[in-house]
Length: 375
Ligand SMILES: *Cc1c(COP(=O)(O)O)cnc(C)c1O
Image 1 (cartoon, rainbow, N blue to C red):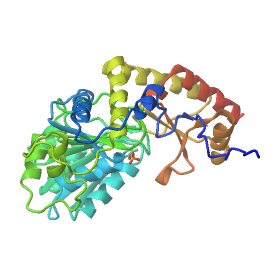
Image 2 (cartoon, protein in one colour):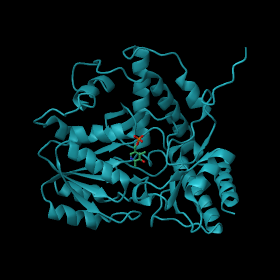
Image 3 (cartoon, rainbow, N blue to C red):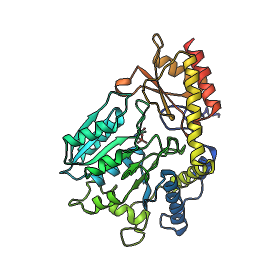
Image 4 (tube, rainbow, N blue to C red):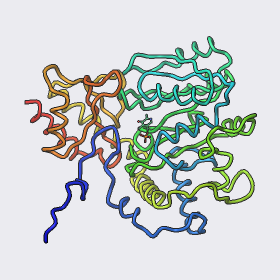
């Protein structure tokens, strides 16, 4: 008796050039298959410590409280919000795309009053706009902003913002899910108080962990809480006892860390640091430029005024069939790109050049495939 393989038995090897996940190097996949240790095994704790130390390098921070939250990027967002926001707080969230909207939703669920400052999708905020909003809402204790708005491809500058926020007695929270490991990001130099990211974008690791980092001001706000965070799973006062041994009591079991994902993240970070952060950021810039030049030759233009390197959001040309083109890219070329999200649905294609995916080979391939599909 013969058995035909189920079409789902062996996942295809796609070329992942969408908004995430990004292509994962074999080295990282192999790391996943190492023997599972116990979460309190000294060897595992040493691996976790190495991972956190490498995360500090990539975030460019000395923050002791830097660790991977169990869960994808959204878990990092929830972790920061849940721990930094108390029900009576007023918060300002900068909204210029889907992820700003999500941050508003998540923070509202913490019981806070959320004010927004808005910019058209595709645009970024000036520091003056945010300063004006803080002037209008003097009780704001936290300002949330997205560094890399993956829904629109907009690259938000962050230099000088923390000074404005701190002068008002507030903290700065940054979403760096699509920028960490692909764009310049200096947590300490830029005065960022709390930040979260994801493994499956520019770090080129499978989805499943969300690196976060908290500075002294953020720690002080958490320590001064009058109420417990509503999430037990994401409560940093307990998590830090496990991840850093900090907060008293040594290493204490909280939940079973995703052991094998930690191996994968450690390997992915090793690859980042072997390449060198600066060289990696320069590679993302060069690949973005190469794609932009090729797209211009095809008559394709960008939507955002200030584009990310890791995510290229382009206008779908008149007459092109959005779904048909993406289906053909996937079936004929094995290439995944993203469609538009939110108000951009049907209007935009999102081409991610993240981590391992940001290569000459992939750029030239997606350009050739697009040329064929648009003919
Ligand atoms: C991808 C992304 C997230 C969410 O990450 P998940 O891993 O999908 O949970 C959050 N913010 C931004 C800017 C993102 O690009």
